Image (cartoon, rainbow, N blue to C red; front, side, top):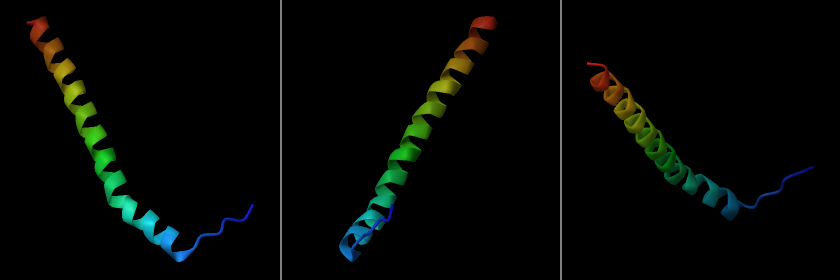
Length: 47
């Protein structure tokens, strides 16, 4: 299977990278906030 791309398609793909990274980091940030929140809630309920 051979993939063929033209210059505008490649340019568009490269232009999407920052937006995709931004979405990925936002998802990670939300996940970390939720995980830390559950952890801290668990600690508080133990005391």
